Image (tube, rainbow, N blue to C red):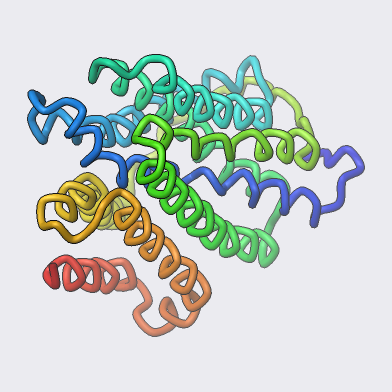
Length: 286
């Protein structure tokens, strides 16, 4: 893959900055309780769909993303995805009187998120190999957590001070990220269509790890969709508190990324299973 004269350090920095939005679903976790107060006739499930839709729309859009690569370079797909997250955050500034307005915003945000997630990993594989690839992917997990920390805390602060509609303005972080991707990541080329010579089966280990990742996703989604409502109904805190709690979760993720190598050496193929047990223990403390 051509680098257009850009050094690998600059490219890596651009891809890591791109990753800051990959935990953007944490932005909506602190605002759900306040959204519920604005729509008292709506059920808890209806309010939680505001966040759940982001996750639900991600899978089908990931499957459709390769079609975009036939007409756009991967970098431009990533820019489009980041722009969609920005657009989704701006929708509630003008459309906020009905729940379907927020559902629309979530669909747009989820679409953008899926494009960024797919192209981010793909671009790392395009420009880096071997040890360099492992290092960049390790740093990526840290940057995802850093972005999640900033987004969760920012959303909670905006919501606590200026209302849940302004909580969405945390997606303005996408503006400098778009500029960074444009300036630091090579444009790339539209790949030629490849003819498949035969199907490949799914290894049983892939199914195993896929199920573990599914369980992990359930834990995270349950935490995010219930956090703000739980704190509000227990009288523990407001959206600002929810943002702080969500950001702490992301900060711990940074520490986890730093010690991941040691943990993998210790638990090997049982690493994800051990992580699920730790998550379950944390949930049981509530």
